[in-house]
Length: 249
Image (cartoon, rainbow, N blue to C red; front, side):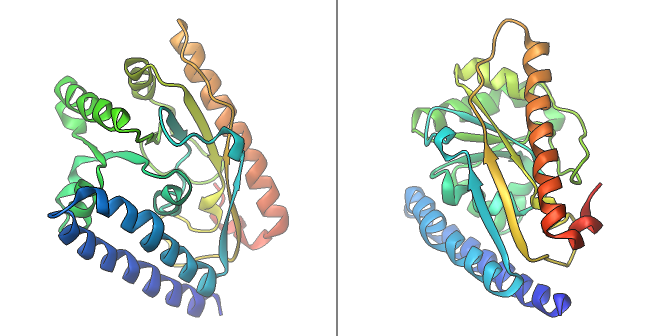
């Protein structure tokens, strides 16, 4: 049954995303602002509805008191494509920092561009950071919070590939607090997996952190907070949904 439900979920979810990318690519030629509302208030909610309907997968948000709609940077664990799709439903107008190569993909990349995502060319070194900071300052000045995955890639639940200091540089340049975000989405929607497991995935926001003089200590504390909370969320999910253990690291 899970194969059939996953197949239906994938068809409708990716179908919605493709439709949304095509439409917003055309909308963006007229009004970039309209693409923000199109995704956050229509396309993503519809997509998540189909995910709940066919896969039985829901999202629970915790720590809402720490969520801010502007003037902050979110440092989020990255385990699944799920958080990249659903987080803008809760953090309106948020933008992600993503690989520049993704913006070259027809329709998908164009939709990212018109939405206002911040591309970075990792191979360009210092010049890439300069260009990214210019874009980041522009988004923040327009009241758009920034979401960064400090590990730079998706990791299996229970694992980490190390937190990169680029996050701290951006936070210092923008003089913005950092809100840690933990989750267990990878147990339900694993990287490179066809299956979508039913249950309630949790995304939890934590108390904001402000960068201080000791940069090493800040990054160590950020990693400790996020990884510890992810461990708690993973344990909770595995107790409720033991079948998700197949996706644990």
